[in-house]
Image 1 (tube, chains in turn purple, yellow):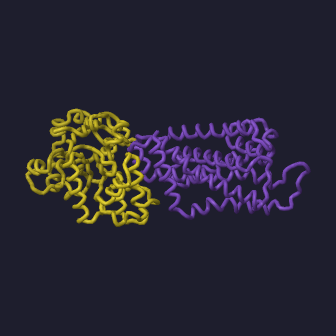
Image 2 (cartoon, one colour; image 1 turned 90 degrees about the vertical axis):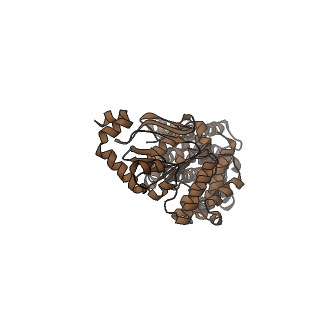
Image 3 (spheres, each protein chain N blue to C red; image 1 turned 120 degrees about the horizontal axis):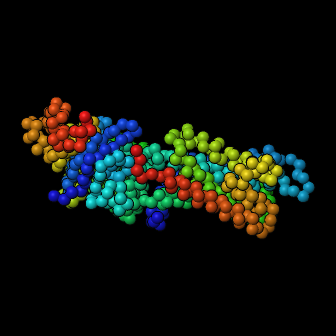
Length: 251
Length: 255
């Protein structure tokens, strides 16, 4: 790995993004629009005494899920384009290391996700009065780590797709089960044993638990930090697997 | 004469099909070597093997004294793929500057590479908005920007206007004069005459490996296209004797 090449690669990916104004607009606006929808959808729902409102509960989790889903999709297509356009093969004949490329994607889209998550959190807190016991900064931090998880999984999954059609279908395979089992719809400890076990090995469950910890506690808890470390470890594992899919020699 | 590339008994399979059947050849340093042959003859596969991105069956490829694909070679080699492999959503200049950075070079070098392929006036255009010929030149600029010792170009002049094509060939010779080794594939015979040496490949077998003058003399004609036709006929006519004469290992494989 080389810092110079990593920085150049991160800059290149951000420059590509900058030329695509519509994608930038959608990255920034779509999560806020979805939060708006959620707000009006849940407006007037009764709040059980002593519990957070339904909007507070769901919006908090969504702040982590939106960047995860969006960055997974964006990255798997971006990486697939590298593979199909021949730029990947060419890059691998240059001094660029595999990790320079993968970390470059992680950094570039992680930065984009940081802006995205900040905008969405800003809208949630200021416009829709989201209230969490812990700080909004932690919510954004968890959202960004989660986005990088989406990036890492996207980099890995793109290796198994030959076309964009196939690539987008990894979303239902990789992302939706994690959303269903993350504890948003059914509490994880009330799931059947085998589903609970599945939930325990899916990284998104930890990100959601970390967000719920911020929602319930004024100070960052040990559980929250542990969860964040688990998600970060999942990122590293996914990147290592992704690196293994980058072959300098092909048939 | 120093050797830049040495290929020995190279056999490559793609899928179930064998595409190179034991090729042996040598490319001298500081020269322009043309790799000529019809579409599907194995040119790209041979170039990929030299670059080190092709999984090879048997045989060896030595590049600048090292096995093809060695990590150290990645600083010394420039590769132009057949389809332009540049980022269509970046400008020509941004592409060149990115590839320059990979080799530790700066914006000035990148701009010089862009100018050298005649794209200075289109430098700020997105590659996606360029014509096919311009796109392939943008890709060429990125292959040359690292000032490689060895340049592997897969059909660099396809779709270029004749004036530009002549300019590109002049540039290749200027580079060779300064010590760069160029291996350039083409399926256009009139480009063959511009090379210092020629490798003619057909159906995964090497038919000729010599200077254009020697090939003309051997075939007894001044027209290179005609010379190649005669060589192919001679090769297929008495395949047994010529093949076993030059490449004994293949003679046995053919039977």
